[in-house]
Length: 358
Image (cartoon, rainbow, N blue to C red):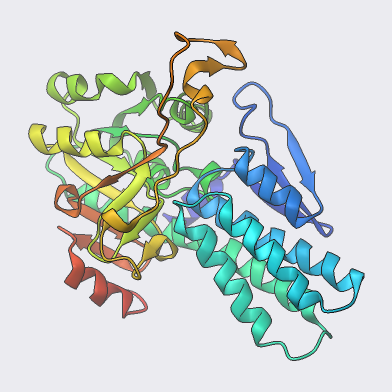
């Protein structure tokens, strides 16, 4: 199965090549595939802030490479470069506050840097660390896809109908995808009849990215308005809602793209199983519950305009871009270390203490 999954990989969002970070500009998809090169930590921070790259794992990977670029520049400048590097740490850490993968990747890079006692070999060591962060996320996605497929296979009905929200595919990760990785693998196994992709206002990640990824692989996908989800659950026999996550707290509350919470409420009402797929780098055991997660709010103009063209009445717009789904609305959490049915704090603590569950 793993070989079949690898054979289908055609989309990537992040590439490190010849000492430069290249990011697929996701703002231009699906109409144009344009790669942008980045040479400094500040450029990478701006790319994350302005949504050139998005998705919790992908921005963590990008930040790791961004810090590597910062180290290269600070070393070249001389002086107390480690102290100067703190500006790059701070700038990268601040660009997207909700997704914990960004902070996790930067902490991992810092830990590697702190183990290096002299300047010799610093760039080589940190490049290896960034590459490992990138590759380990791709491997985690493949493992999660296999776990998720087995859950779908156990369901009474096959093939099944799946609803997903935002984009948790290869574009949002180091490769293959989290939620979309499970869906793609299930399609390869003949377990998927139809996928419904929420449009995901206001950035339309579902309409522009998820639909593009799935259609490119021949997966039957239909785009639906965000507000149509409950109607579909009632009339179209949805079997699963499968989503990714940007942060999961110690009690298994899940922060994800705005609109996820209402999907979970509707899924419970209609008896639809709700699956969250996320690597352990998304799990933040330092926060007790979702109430502690900082929720990013972006410029209200994202709701009022599309491509700079007015879309709505000129009124104030509130634009929170994430919400928190309580753990008791989640049927199953899939990570690369294993699967938790009816996740709670005790089960998550056990999983995080082990290398992998089977």
